[in-house]
Image (cartoon, rainbow, N blue to C red; front, side, top):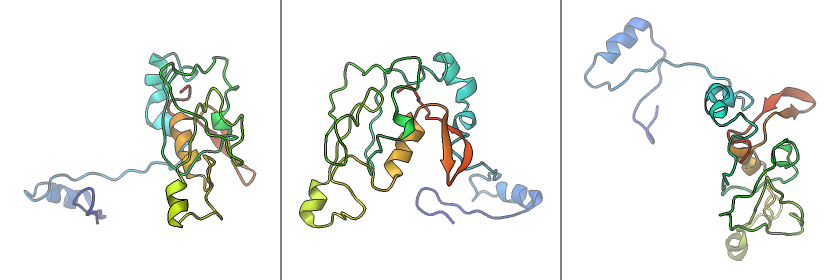
Length: 181
């Protein structure tokens, strides 16, 4: 049952029952459920990028070129291959309008930013001041403590064709939606 973003429910019914429901005046819409593999290794194909937007922009090698994408999340791991700036034959130009900084800390040393990951900051001061900063899992730096920010950023802006290996098992190659951003 859904109450927050939409008012509705999910139910297993026959085609006849779905048809009967859809004709009721109280029912705005009946939608057939469909399966989607929950794997970011398939996202570009699922969104149609490989046969649409990427082709129109010159392919994945230039898709997102000149775009800076900003994230406010748990941080970022600059050593993740999704953010390497030496994996493409095309350089990663820093957009002229970019005015951010790369904040250097003990956990995020000089050189953590490059031409792919062009800036990073942390905003832990308030949590530290209020006494709610958890130093066992959080960093007072741009470094990602739990991987969420790294994952989110790699889905949007990660390099193309990065092998996804978990516990020694290869799950395909992943790509950001704007891999040259």
